[in-house]
Image 1 (cartoon, helix red, strand yellow):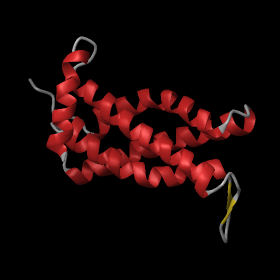
Image 2: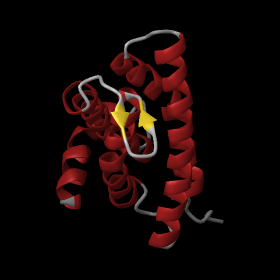
Image 3: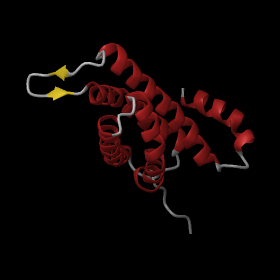
Length: 159
């Protein structure tokens, strides 16, 4: 599966070669695909699973946009890690468990940013939740790329 994904990405890379190095290109492609997956899951969760209704658990009530956000994360986290580890940053010298832990930390910070911005955009600015999610994604992507490249999947510096 990894080889298939890499072959597809490598086929299209020449069109983007003058704009991106291969790692950045693969990050944009894989991260973009996972982001689309995440937003699609968010949309489905918000509109069809939670039906824009508050989610009452025995100990807390969660707004539908936050419930959809958490549901989407449950699925996009493992796919994102898989793509980053095996397709994008495969040269990383870190142990897989260390990568997973660091990826989790950086994603948690991204989640925090998503949560804060989502609450603000939806509840304060009254922007529709799916549109808010898309806008927030553009804000958080820059942080995420730097965190993945220089923290979660860093490589040894060559002398």
